[in-house]
Structures are given as structure tokens and as C-alpha cells.
Length: 284
Image (cartoon, rainbow, N blue to C red; front, top):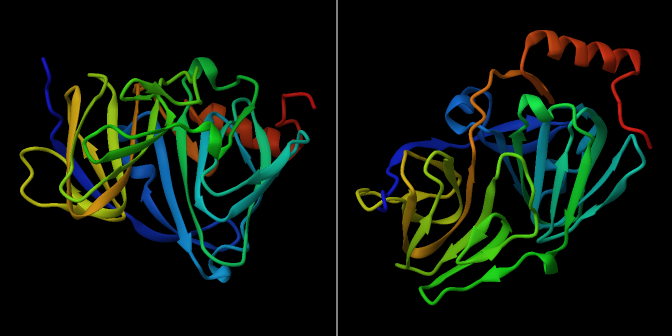
């Protein structure tokens, strides 16, 4: 039996500065972690002014999480301490599993419009110290699904209308969709019962449950309640949103900066190793 998820909460993104001076919108972060488990943070960087982003994110460590970068426009050059390097271009995704530890930099490049998102997903205690890995997903690898109901979805991870995305075998079984609906179009999409589900509105507006009287607009996060189905009706100008879900870990979170562990002792050890130069466990 279908149980439509109601809107539990709407979160408004807030302006912040990260890295060496990148201006961005934080959709959610530290204080929302229990409700969005296994997801930790979502940033929306969107500017056509090079001064807002060119300082980038110089060398910094990660451990215990996955960082998922999805570019709509522009490019980000990246490199790390074990010899990997490359460029994330428009309509491409980098799914990086930091695992036991990586030190890397991410440098947006101008000129012109830069628009992308970075999502942080937690790793369970059993996988915190796994070997780091990258999934570099090119634009032509991401299926675009167009059901006959005014909907279109890019399937990055998970499944939509029977089509699976290229990123698979992720421990928290996430789903990551980029969904577009024509004006007034209605979408019904099945979700796993016990998973946490949220939508981030990129453009336009929509009603995100049958019982909702008001529409929710761009740069808001819609956090859904329990159920096994999401229903969305696009507003007069249509809507584009990221739809993300994952299996909650229900584990303690010890988080400081770019490192997320389960205990304060593990967190302290990670920073001590970073200072001593023993942070990186993977071999080149």
C-alpha cells in the first residue's frame, strides 16, 4: 500500500563563505544531521562573478565520509595527495569516498557562470577506514529518463522509472536524481520506507505533498516525513529539484571541519595523524 510522505520541514539555505573565500549557499549542515542521516551537508555554489569562487578550496583533509560534487555549469579542477587529478565539467559528477583519509584541493575556474552542488554523505563505522576511491561520472554516462507525464530526470544514483544510475554499490544505498517537471506536471515516485528523503529546489516551485496548500520555491530544502512515495506538483513556471534519499546509519557522529568519525577519540586521532604526517593510509 502506498503511503505518501508529507512535508516534515522546510529549510531555507543560508549564505556562507568556505574554503579560501568561496561564497555559497548552505542548504543544510551540522545542526540538521540527525534528521537527514546519512547526509551531513549540502552546499550550492552559484555565481557568474569569478571573485565569488576563484579562491577555491585549497589543500584540506577528509576522513570518514563521501563527497559528491555535481556541476551544472563551469568546471572544477581537483588533485589529491595520492596522485589523482582531473577536471569536473558541466553536467558531470565526482563521487569521492574519502574513507581512511585523503588530502585534496578543489579549485573552481572562471570566467563566467559557475553552478554546482556538493553533498556530504556519512560512512558507517564499518567503512570509515576503507580505502579511498573516486567515481568520475561523465555527462554521457548519466541516463536521462522522460516518462510521458511532463517529467524528466537525470539518474546519477539509484533508480527512476526502471532506469538505474551509473553510481552503484554505495553502502548507504543512496538515490540521487536531478528532476525537472513542466508547469503543473505531477510526479509520483516510490521511495524506501525507512530511508530519509529530501528535495532541494534548484529552480521554480512546487507542492511537495498532496496535502500541501502552498508551494515551495528555489534554494529551499524539503525534508519529507515517513512513507514510501513522494508526490510533487510543479508550479506555474515548472520546477527543477534534486531528490536524494539514503538509508540512515543511526550511529553517533563526531564531526569537526572536514572529518567525520563516530567518537571524539577517533576525531582527535585523525587530527593528530594529520599534524604528524601519518594521516594518509592508502598507498600511491
